[in-house]
Image 1 (tube, each protein chain N blue to C red):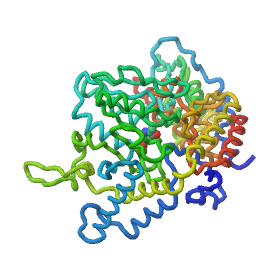
Image 2 (image 1 turned 135 degrees about the horizontal axis):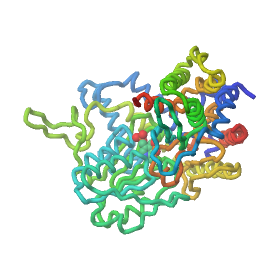
Image 3 (image 1 turned 135 degrees about the vertical axis):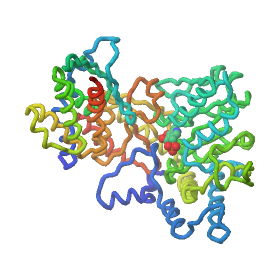
Length: 152
Length: 407
Ligand SMILES: Cc1ncc(COP(=O)(O)O)c(C=O)c1O
């Protein structure tokens, strides 16, 4: 295996492969019900719909569905699973941590998270070597964060 | 002489650069932009080192010479296109600019509520959105020709596309996704019978060689320099002489006027009135040099056969690889093909191959109406040019096999 495969292995970490193969609540939505939010990356055509509700400050994920690469799908899966049933403020904080980690490689605050979750998030660290792919990791996170902040 | 034996790569410094550093560089994205031959790069450098002056303004020798050279470049492009006179073509910033000029400077003057404009579902956004917006603004209707999704062949023969309300037809010569060449000549004959002006987006016409004006029989031809061995941000709009009188400039400024006073301005003659501001002289010289390179080094060879041979090799391989759906047309292909794999998303594939120095394009290719028609969200595309050879394909094939194992 040559050096470039190492980066590829890192990018396509097994956590990402697993979530890509069986994403959390993917396609579990009720037919015909309006999605809460739609995110898309106009550069590549990746597009997801997310069904989510906030009831008494607690998040309920209905599911998500759409089309995109393994990184965008896996990132959506990890974040939706991690925030399902959690408080809104906590989830906003988590999404911010994730975004800072992808954008800046910021790891310091990940230690505040549950260890399993921190490991899952770190699995996306491979994008640091592929800046063009950061957008993929951030696709659902950014739209979801914006939507959560707008809920009062 | 076969192009394969020519080692055309030696003419393109970028291939030498990667070779010198012992890095793989398999460039399969020429439909996005072609690499530049050394002669073009040298031409640009020579202009900036020895000849730089403002075109159309200088009285001193260097300024006057810059104007001469700019007009000489126009003449070279005219020769390539088979235009009867150099003044029939305008230098622009590319196909996008050229088409918008026609939409806003030509058709907008004429289009009325209830009129129709014809495009096809396989157009690049550059040949779709300007017409769509103009129709919306004027209350006109956009008629969209369909294609056979398997071959990309246009279904153009219906009478409605040549009806009394049709004021304009705008079609691509070669699809940047499926890569097939459309029968523009036949469509143009029908359009002429009804005196409907027709524009051709010739961005991907490098495989069609010289004399597009004579071959196609259309009213407007748009192409980009950077897809024909020239620099980015350069392009051409050729306008048939009998469509020039109805054409108004869209952008106004210096260098395009007869006389300006406080009350009014009288415009210069065509083509000066259509090229306001200080032109991209170096770009025009580079573009012309790219076309000269084509005429001198490629035009006399079996260039078309070379592209088709490589294209067929890629298609045969992909079919055999399995889990791949290929979108192309081998009979009428121009070295461009797209595909989707049921085992990997196109972006993940492009990342993998990119890491191996293989450049392919992934995404919607600025052709979302076509992607919807094909019921796909995103495709991988291989597009070949004359410098590609069997060795490029060998490495592509080798890494595709590895990619399939990896994902
Ligand atoms: C068929 C087609 N039309 C138009 C364009 C736009 O060309 P440019 O970006 O040079 O204006 C392209 C380039 O991608 C193309 O492939």
